[in-house]
Amino acid sequence: MQSIKCVVVGDGAVGKTCLLICYTTNAFPKEYIPTVFDNYSAQSAVDGRTVNLNLWDTAGQEEYDRLRTLSYPQTNVFVICFSIASPPSYENVRHKWHPEVCHHCPDVPILLVGTKKDLRAQPDTLRRLKEQGQAPITPQQGQALAKQIHAVRYLECSALQQDGVKEVFAEAVRAVLSPTPVKRGRSCVLL
Image (cartoon, rainbow, N blue to C red; front, side):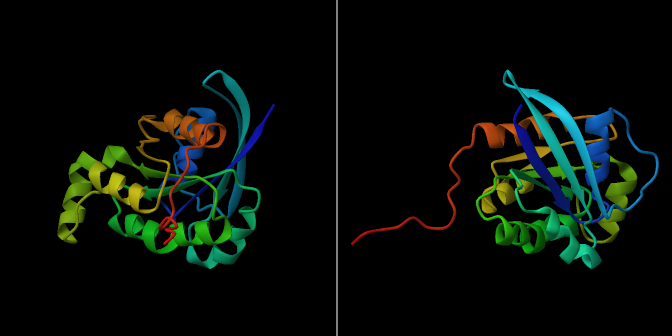
């Protein structure tokens, strides 16, 4: 059986661990425990093919920058996460996560995932963001960023509501089994 290594990255507290625990156990964790480094494994059947999906959870906090990149070799697909309710985590995809992943693994497919979709319409979240002069990230903003970083797909999910979680990892598997050519930069022009 083919094994696929999927590394999940993104700012601290955007929901990476909840996404992985929800996918592997169908349960939502009750408390936040910052991850330093963790592994999960699941068998996944996608488009009639069964694979062993090795899921690598990473620390988003800056103090783990050097340690985190040690998990990158032999990665087959990256899932870059941001929280829909955290505009700074969205900006960090462009300024931190995409550059870091591309520096270490330039030809590995990337999925962009907006987490905590359930908070987009939650009154407390909307009020908190409005007080800071911000708003939740829209699906259009997510799509635009995915295009900008040449991600193979943009998906949204809510681990709390178990909405879109299975789709994230099905698409991660598809990105490896049926890769679509990714255009990076400019094409060569002969004169």
